[in-house]
Length: 119
Image (tube, rainbow, N blue to C red; front, side, top):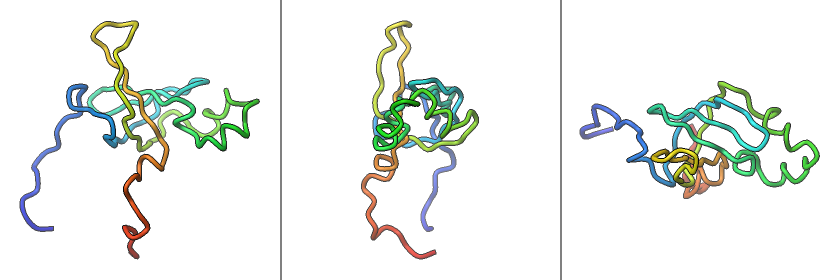
């Protein structure tokens, strides 16, 4: 690596977070229909079940959909996620919801097989 490298990383805030941004997070809560993810900067994101599990797996487990998330994930698990959208929270004014996805197709969007090198 050549050239100057940044000395610090910018803090992640609601002002600079945007759709398409990739982040690391930690699962903080598992519900029937979604996951709560703790993000850098004290932020919290939500992952719908359909964005946490591949659709084919959800279709094959319709009868146990409420338990699929708890069988695949655990509180404290580190996950890589991508920001889908930011919504204003209807319950609390001034608050925004951060919607995330764990789908690998979105996380690795733009990569091709040519990008993979032997290591």
